[in-house]
Structure formats: C-alpha cells, structure tokens
Length: 280
Image (cartoon, rainbow, N blue to C red; front, side):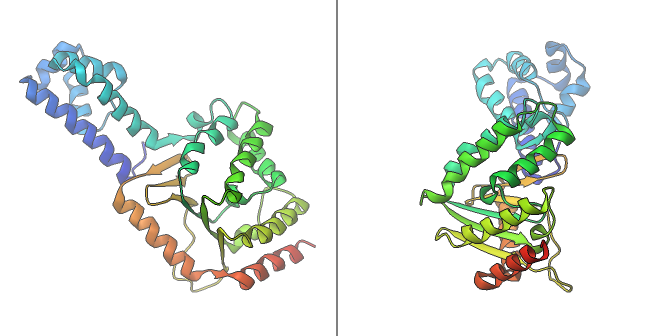
C-alpha cells in the first residue's frame, strides 16, 4: 500500500465508517468477530485501517450489524481506496493497451493538463517511434503480454486532444530528457524535432529546465496534474492517484517552483536544437 496521505486518509475514513457501524449496532469487537467467523485481531486491523476489507468482509460486517443496505456504498468506497495506488504488475497484467486506455476518460474531462517530466518525454507529445521504444522497454522488463503495437495506437489516439482546442497543456521537461532515452539516436532526433513543432501550438506551453549547479530544487518524480482534481505520480513500483487537496496544493507549488527555473520560447527551442546537434 502506498504511504501517500491521500491513500492513508481514504483507508482510515473507511475504517472509521466500519467502526461506527459496529458501535451503532451495539456489538463489541469480539461479538462482531464471532458473528463474522474470524479472529478478533482481524476486526482490530480493519478498524485501525491496517488491513483493507474485502468485498466478502464488508458483506459479513454489515450482515452482523444489520445494515445490509449499506453494502453497495461501502464496497464502492473500498474499491475507490484500492484504486488510488495500483502496482504496475496489477495495472499491466493484461498488457499495456488496457493501462493506456484506463486513463482516457480522465484525460478527456481535463481542461488543463500539467506535466513535469524528469525521465521521459510526456506521452502527449511523443512520436510514434519514441512511444514504441518506451513501451517496448517496459514490456520487456515487466509485462508478459506483448501488445505494444496496440498500446502505441491507444496513445496516438489520445494525442488527438492536442488539436481539439478543448484542452490546454503545460509541459515542464528536464534538459536531461532531451539527451537520454531508451530509443536510438535517429528516433530521438525525430522526437526532439516533433517537440519543437508541438511547442508552437497555441494550446501548449513548453518549458525546459536547464541542467545546472546551484538549482533551488532537485528533479523529482514525473507527475501529471489533471486540473486541480487529481495528480498522478509514476513511481517505480506503481501508479499513484493523489486527490487530497493539500497534497494537490503541494504539487501545484512544486510545479510553479519548477516552472520558475525553466526557459521558454526561443531559449527552450535553443536547448532542444543543441540536443539535436549533439546527436549528429
């Protein structure tokens, strides 16, 4: 389970709700445990938020407390908590295409998408060849199903948002990303040329953060901000969805601070051109 406060607080809120249901029913923890047919320690873990209740646990809990009508709502809440943090192995167990398509509705309902990239080009501005190289490297490392071609198509379809006029994009890219990639030099040159072209789009703001000493902030993990509603963070172990307002505010401040370090316009294009020239 992620230690993000968004996940922790959502898990504890569900635990408090189950605890209140038990208290309102007049049952002690031991009595509820006996009726559910499990050890009292399990009840304690669920009420403390240390263990996530399964669908069957919630049904048994509500039956013991005489509130079966609350089962659907509690199961939905538990499912929402579980999806706040998803390990890559679970998210990608059926392949990479499903993982790409799972976030389509979130992208579509977002007016302002802000992306900070310290490791890889943001997906919205990747070329087909660059995307194929990135997804192939992921598939080789951790995904048994090979549906890379289908996943590439799914990402290319999502990129149509760039030209719809209904969305705005704020992109911050560390200069390192202009020079390091899992693709070959020819593919990276094509990607960098595409980045220059996209930066001229009226709905795209591109900033490049120069590699330098004495910077006020070190690079952080890649993150995606969907309006002020949600932040998605790509961790080594999984995909984290942040929804707590104070955590979103922290990422908003971080994005603003990083943006103040970036160069834009002609200066950003010059850094990209220098990276192209360095590749021969």
